[in-house]
Structure formats: C-alpha cells, structure tokens
Image 1 (cartoon, rainbow, N blue to C red):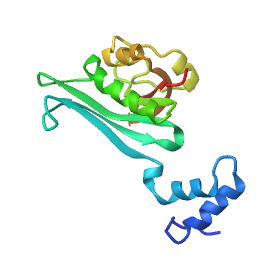
Image 2 (cartoon, one colour):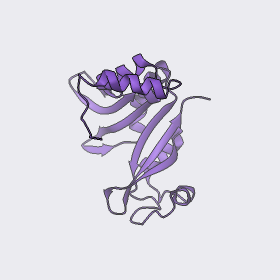
Image 3 (tube, one colour):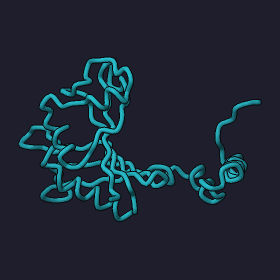
Image 4 (cartoon, rainbow, N blue to C red):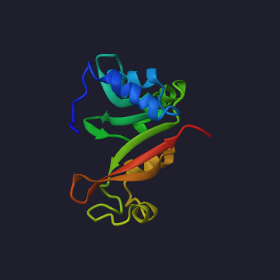
Length: 176
C-alpha cells in the first residue's frame, strides 16, 4: 500500500469509502463536503467591540466547527487603558459568541486557557483524570472568571506552550 495526499481527483473515492463503511455518521454528500472544502470543517468567525467598527477596544476570534456542533474561542482580549485583560470586560463578546453558537444549533462552546497560576502548572500531568479532578486556581482571575461564566475544565493539551506549561480545555455546554 502507498500513501497519497488528498486531491480533487481522489476525494470522490474517499467520500464514497467514508459513506460506505460508516453510513450512520457520514452520508456521501456530507463526506464529500467535509473533504472538499475546509469551510465545512472549520471557519473563522469573530467580533470586535469599540466606539466604531474601526476603533476596536476588544475582540474575540473563534473557529466554527459545524461538524462537531462547536464554536471554539481561539483568541480574545480587551484594551483596558493600555492593559490587556480578558475577564468581565469580554462578557458582551462572549455573549455574542454564545448567541452565534446557539443560533447555529451548536452544543459546545470551547476555550483553551493556559495553566499559568493553575495547580497543574510546571508539573507533569500524570493521569489526566486525576489532574483534572484535582485542578484548582491559584487566584487566577482569568480562569476563575471563565468558571463563573459557566465553563468547566474538560481536559488538557499537555505541554502545548512549553514543558509543564499546559493548555486546559474549557467547555461550556449549551444544551440543558
């Protein structure tokens, strides 16, 4: 067997294979859409807040994942008199992102926060379920705010920023 890169010439065959062996998940058209256009897998969407459209004070950029019913916050921030903040000042933008996700029928709002000032920072995670169970904030305002907003720690991207510097996957369920 050989390995080949996807191309316009072979994705029809891949879509057929996908829909043949896993028809309860992918039908042919859904498989073809996912394979042939990245916009069916992920697309950027974002908003800014400011006095005008051309004077942003804050922003939120998300990846829209329709195939996972998920809107993932990729970066956000707010200029508080020259200081970067990302807590309660972000709430109007977080609400806008959540409204967009709900309007699209999504079930998940996701965000990855760094482990700075979190109990797991600078450590090996060991068994992830134990690290997640024992996860606490060391008075990290950003983490605490997202917990208050309804996010829950759901997993890790271990060592993603540096060794011992983890990403904490935060999830807000939109289905109740």
